[in-house]
Structure formats: C-alpha cells, structure tokens
Image 1 (cartoon, protein in one colour):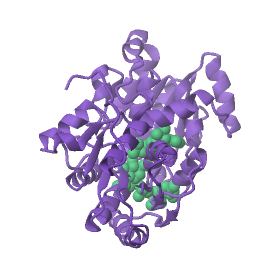
Image 2 (tube, rainbow, N blue to C red):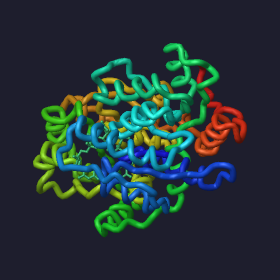
Image 3 (tube, rainbow, N blue to C red):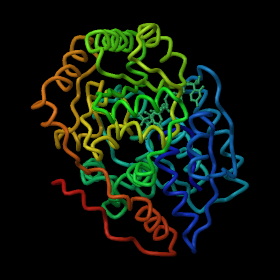
Length: 383
Ligand code: UD1
Ligand code: UDP
C-alpha cells in the first residue's frame, strides 16, 4: 500500500505505483491522505492513478499536528480493512511520517522511499529533518537514492541488508514526461516559450519552505522585483504554491512587473517543459534541486543547507540562502557572466537513471518473499 499526500510525494511515488501495478506477484492498493488537494490531484491525473482510499484531510492553513493527527486516525481504519503486507511511504512530509507511525503501530512493515537524506540540522528543513529521521527508526526497508544517503543510514547503525540503493524515482518521473514537451495551457507561457526559442533568457522561481516563510520570503520578493527592473530583457516565471502564507509574503512585491509571470501550480508536464527552457533556476524546493541538474540547469538554492549535497559537489547547485543582496548578486552573475554560467551548467545525474521504481519494487518483492533485488543503482559518487 503506497500512501502519500502532497505534490512531491505523488510525483516520486507515481513511478512506484505504476511499477507495482505491473508486478505480477504483488497487489497494489493506493491510499492518499489529501494533505494537498489540487496539487496532488493534478499529479494523479497525469499518471492515471485513481486512489483506492482518499482521506481528504486538507484544511486551509492546516497545522503540522492537524495533518498528522488526521492521517494517523484516518489510516488506522484503512489499515484494518485492507491488511496490507507492507506500506510504502516517501520522503519526509507530515503525511509520510504519520503514515509510517500508523503502519508501525499496526505491526505492518514500512518501506521508506527516498531514505537516508540528512541536513544534520534538526530545525532545517523544519519539520522534514525530524520526520525523515523518525521514519528511518521504524522502517523495515530503506530505499536510499544514492550512496551518500546509504552512508548516512549506516552511520546511524541501520543494518546494511535493510538498505538498498535505488536512485531517486523523481528521475523516473522526469524522464517519463520531459521529452513530451507538454503544451502550456496558459497562453502567456506559450508566448514566453517562443521568446526563449528566439534567445530570451528565463529565470524559473519556486518557493514554499516553512523556514523561509515571513521575512526571508519577503526578501526574496524584493530581490525578484529588483532583478526584474534591472534586467528588462529577462523573463521571470513563478508558479505560485497554493499555500496562502507563501502568496501573502511574496506576491505583493511582484505586482505591476510585466516581465514577471505568476501562475497557479503548473501540471508536472508543463513544469518540466518550463524547466527545460529555463536559463537559471532559483528555488527552495527539494524535488527541483534533483531534477534541474539532470537537464544541465544551474540551480541557486534559497536555503542555508541541503540534504541533497550530491549536485552541490558536482557544481550544478549552489546554496545561496535568502538574503536579498545575495539573491540579486547570484542571479545577476549567472545572467551576465558567461564563465560563471558555464561553470555551473553541466548535466549531471547523481540522483538516478530512470530505473529507481523498478529497483524499489524488486526490493519490496524480496521483502515480501516473492522476488529478489535487482543490482543497486551506481551513482558514481564515492562513499
Ligand atoms: C508540505 C510539506 C513539505 C513539502 C511541501 C510540498 C510537511 C511538513 N511539509 O509543505 O515537506 O515540501 O508540502 O509542496 O508535510 N494548499 C492548498 N492546496 C493544495 C496544497 C496546499 O490549498 O493543493 C494550501 C492549504 O491552505 C494548506 C497550505 O497550502 O493548508 C499548506 O500546505 P501544507 O502541505 O501544510 O504545506 P507545508 O507543510 O508547508
Ligand atoms: N512542480 C510542479 N509544478 C509546479 C512546481 C513544481 O509539478 O508548478 C514539481 C517539481 O517538478 C518537483 C515537485 O513539484 O518535482 C517539487 O514539489 P515542491 O517544491 O512543492 O516540494 P519539495 O520537493 O520541496 O518537497
């Protein structure tokens, strides 16, 4: 039983669901919590997934405790009815950790996809670093995306045999859609794509992290407004997160600036198309940090640390924090200094090769005694 609730979990779980549905010796029952609604549904729709159970827990301005409490109580009933042999949770969201706890308390083995990521700062990202550590403590099988995440788990005394390196399923998802160059539903983006084809530069921006909400995010808003005024030849696109707290912080600074296009959350196919057209990516997203390097896009990460050091080491991702001056300087440098740009614009694939879901399902089959593991993902990183 895959269980998920937010957009990034849905994107990363979709390839696993598809592979489970194909597996002859396994039955797949999908449960969503509905921690997200529109942003979750648009992913399920794209991948043709119709959940068997939907807890529909979302509330405007929900708190972490509301999400966890509703997930655990709602799942308890589903677990009793379905009696799954294992549940699969993904990553570090409230849904993911609450689902792991609910299954653990019912004596059901937990499979953790994207296991072993660590920032080594319990307050950043908050609460995700704590969530993923809690889930590690109660998981039976740890699907680590890279050797770096495998090593983090080994350092915490996780049994080597319970860890298996798969690559990240986000690369499976990306490779499924990116070459389709899905048409944009917003005519503004269609126009913009044509202009990029004619040589115009595009900066793609996403932001939503809890620890950036408030003054840090207002600083990012001010930085974007300055960048747009100073660089009228450049287009900026911000697909805005549905979270009203995020919108209230950032959007007031962007009003009336013709070269900044603010959209609703884009369907995954459109977003990856836009990513493939972008010159520079400015983000605090985890998933975008993993996708953009594979497309050779320089990524400036508006955070002080990351649990995804692989592409930082490869030189394609740079941590810049949220200071207004620094954001302006770093984006300007990539827009105007070809040497700085070339130094970062390398296509690297430390996060996967598109086979992560098949590997994950092979390890789940082994856990349940109906198959054996494929060879592990070779990420080419030392460790
Ligand atoms: C959550 C995850 C975070 C992940 C992010 C992905 C936790 C603790 N955090 O962020 O790890 O990076 O999702 O985007 O689980 N909303 C809607 N419709 C939607 C989605 C959200 O209206 O489809 C609004 C609601 O008002 C909701 C708010 O956004 O209350 C925040 O959503 P929530 O999932 O609570 O966000 P985070 O916890 O910040
Ligand atoms: N994404 C999307 N539409 C958008 C913005 C992002 O489909 O408008 C995708 C993106 O490609 C990535 C995922 O959403 O796979 C990241 O989600 P988010 O940034 O919300 O969460 P995080 O990865 O930080 O947990």
